[in-house]
Length: 281
Image 1: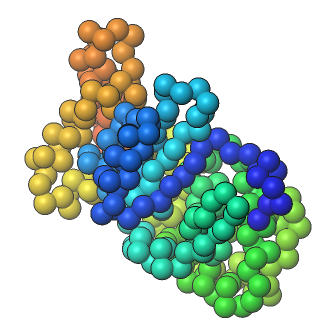
Image 2: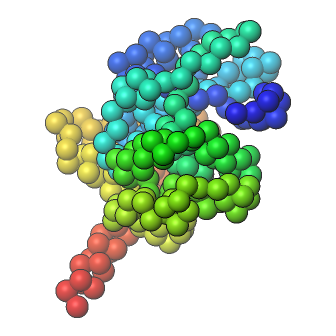
């Protein structure tokens, strides 16, 4: 999309592997000096889509690597995306120094919209909107736009795509095909989409991460093990998310985490009660 790599700066590298290859890929990163403190794949695979890896020992390798086992999985909202389909539609990129596979244009556009609107709602970078505008220009026929419409519906990304396309129109003046300029052919958003967008754009909205945890707990075949993992995640995970000022204070970091989620649970219950009360009125 860009004439030279220097015109598209980045702060990390995202790699996507199939879930069955994830542990092997993580071991390879470990062998070349990268480390993750989270262990999300084993503990919270249904809620997240990646783990971040850093190369702490070598200052010449500043880029963080995000190793993904999924793309749109976030907050536990079920999007119905089979990861194999993304690999089936992959595009091969060849350069003098490197050959690699990347997402198809439609899949890349969906990912860019998800990343901009839902994953980083607090920082709308112009470079991300530029990505979306350039990807839109690569959709050359009606079939591409039909594929975009169908996958938008499948992955429950109607609101994210609509906002992303509006931003690309405003900043870069892109022209959409007839019927898409007013978003008339995009699928109507589901309640879950509206709730998700409200959460990421409103600090006072209900924390939908908790609903994701509870729904995953409800569907888990081993509820006791899942609950233990949630209450007692690995020490490295706690150090990364609730860092103690001293190592011996680590148990208090667990207490802080429990207090945080207990407060969320109380608020979640109050919000649910208010919603039910308003519905009865």
